[in-house]
Picture 1 (tube, one colour):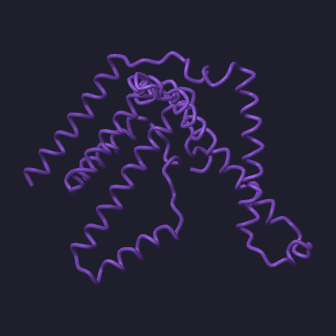
Picture 2 (tube, helix red, strand yellow):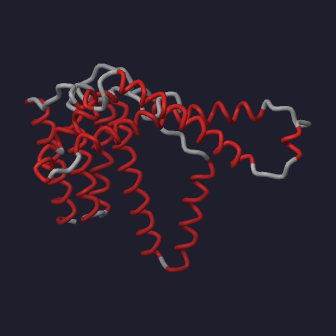
Picture 3 (cartoon, helix red, strand yellow):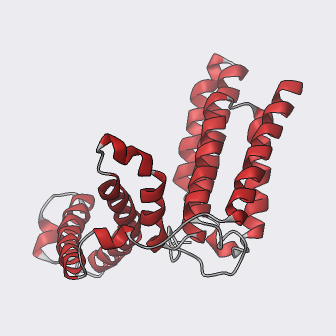
Length: 245
């Protein structure tokens, strides 16, 4: 999973061929529904829908996130803390947890099926109405796109720095100083990130500035309209099921 975290998995599927903005709109509609109606029927429908989308995207099993044991330990601890309050509190805690996992899964689906070069143009097009309010839509789109692009690189740097620290001799003078290894890694990571940011800024300037990142032609098609229609229908069905139950 670490090898493809927040990176496109190059597989030819109907989900990959959708416009990036369509996937963002779909994720927004799902999050909006769960925000106002986080019931178990709605959560169940959304989980089933995301599983179907995952299968349609033809993503390999290796892309499924494998969360560490301490994460599940924290989740279990939260349930135990709510247990003395009553069953209703535990169920509410479970709903919040499942709600968060659904949103994370939707985010991973977008990352795995969308080239990073299409994110900024899609955000710029979706935010086009805000330009009438003189808001820096293009700059915001570039910031989001570069953040998503830089996060996997930053994680790779963290792994390299952690591995390099483990290879350092234990009798080294630095090991005699009483300080946290986490602070060492974070400090080194900040230095590396600053250097990469400078290099990236110079590369963008040499290629014509940030405007080139949002100038890529992108627009929805009939296929995207059908996809949004399916998402709206699934959301409406989830609401109807929740009301019926």
